[in-house]
Image (cartoon, rainbow, N blue to C red):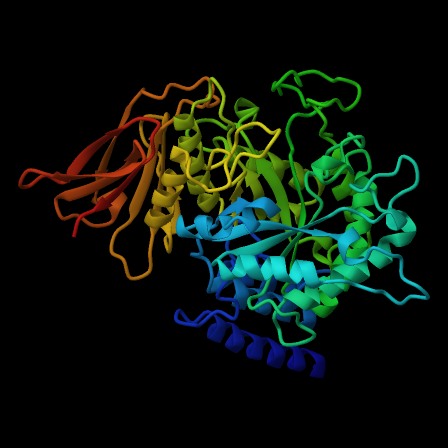
Length: 553
């Protein structure tokens, strides 16, 4: 009886605390960072009262639940506090390299409305020598300066960890991109805990950076199975179980010193598979090649190997399966395979759906994990054109907001020597040659900053992709729409058109005037459509160029 009474008191205090956290005008403790969605129990991309209800059900009925004890319930409350008040942060970012940082690229990106920059922590540079008698020697100076330079330009870094020092690399075949020697996992956990504590900006053992750096991901495209190519940044593809063991060592160590640091399961390429699933065709990777190749280096089974290993751990649920976000990259190689039935689950949204379904098949709790993307992009070729690239960029930003990603980072700010042409800028040190994509993203950022995804609009024409957004204090909704037949950008028409009838049902209010904004020829174009007296709708026609539709006050 006393135990039940104590639990009731604790629960009442918890509810009062939650009510305070959910106050609409609460100021976030992390104003420069996106929200963490560790406890998104129903997988809808937000942490809110609906998740609390699920936790309450477990609290009442399931002694094995993560939320049955006080610590679990309070963890949910903590996440509500972080997540609720930051849900409208624009997720747009860019992949950044040292040459961009040293040549003023951060300021160029920030001026376009870009919010985040992917940066790199090389373990070998922080801890070049093995610890002696358990004593670690770390050098943070260069990383501190790099991160603060990015912050000073108005961007928030997303930190990708890579480059294993030779003393910690696995014996033959040895590589700086993974896996880590199993005997060195605790040393890796130690350096990551030190980094999380240094950069979380919580007032305890902090470094000199002036905002929190909350997102850490471990190795780039770790599903790469070609260990002869360390330039990928990760090559754990044939060692999914070893990757899981690394997460099991790191996650508790980081959370013990910095609970709000968010761990991203390596942003996998999850594409160009050498052992593809049935129905997958992309870039010559449409059949089982027997092993990784240069063109098809990624292991389709890496994710399931790692997640199955994590699921088997008896402490997996208590440790949230040892990661907070599922990371992925999204390009246009194999879009038809990812697509769901039109108009739903197209392109990036389809890829997330297929990944989530696969995770759910391993464990239903894994299916509730939020996603994050540290790369999306489209290379310039003949085709696709620069016009196709800009459309892909706006569409990818809109879809990432619909998926409620905390960030989605364009690859790259500028063309890199020896690489295919992905940049927002053509090569050159003075940023004098921007592509249309740079201006298009600048327009999209200006149009969508502060807006929150509300719903996808299902039109009678299934080739219409249309997404509605709302903004606090703003009457009505804003719609972003484009024509899309589901094909890859290299195969898709850039002139076919569709018409969407917009009215009070879609826009939420009506003044008789609709403003339509779009990007063309590196300029912003605005059309104001005035309806005849008594008209209650407007027919808006558009091509694959996204248009922004809203009511004119």
